[in-house]
Length: 387
Image 1: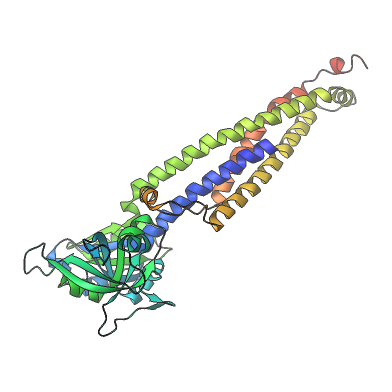
Image 2 (image 1 turned 60 degrees about the vertical axis):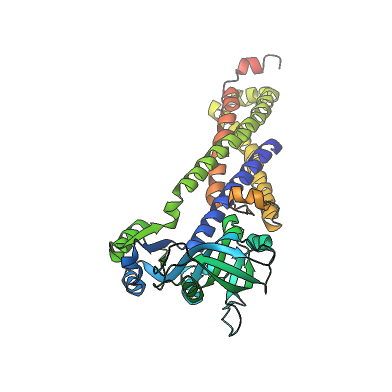
């Protein structure tokens, strides 16, 4: 029972790790980029964002839309005057709260209220924790943001710089966002880069009950030829497919521990059959059918193995809860850039537990079958020869 319990516990922890990792990446990607993003293919469609939003809102599966400005730039501070690469995202707090509630919680402000521009002070921004550390800034510090001029009236790479106030330092535990992203007001970013259009991206939130593929086709039709439609999860389908393959492979590999531990069940049942050989002979002489002994030893194997499975699931779930509660699996910044996240929660899903129970039950029944058949074939004369 102890061997099976350890094997099942290892399987629960491994599945919890990969399920938590995949869920964490999925939530962070959708949380900062919305489910569907629509962006113009050229200047012709860039200026009609309001009309685009009206067309998208008319789609039945669309729950909310939000105009957004994405802009690459540099963030500089007193400690780092040369600046660091940054991704600037200009949003409206109210619209973003309807489209992406997880991201809205990271916008500048406190107590759920967005920060507002104060006359005479730089506009507020929210800076990723790792980027803030590298810049040497904290809440209340001032930074300089430099972006290309998007007015279209001059050279393409003319920089535009402005002073901003760090109103919040956010931590999403998604390494890419914490190390590069800065959230600010859409109007402030539009003014800084002199963008003629109201936004260069429209984010869309879908109804959870809607068919994603059908909704994407309807949005593509409503957007028209001047706009392109992208699904955030589809753009990262390769990553999620690789994680799924990795999880399946790890399940099979660690599942071998459970399969090997069932040999303990085989040994226990074989020894029990040998010890109870005379009892089996007596019962057979009294009229017990061979199938009766098969059922007895199958139930005994199921009892031993099932107890081990229950203990293993309980212990593995406890380990996952402790590791997640105390955030024991954290990565330093350099390693976090490789794994995309700086912290991984262990997620014990009912589906994973069902697969573990099914696999363990199959292995235990297969291990119990041979001793059970051996008990059914005990010869009465041989068992009672010396009685």
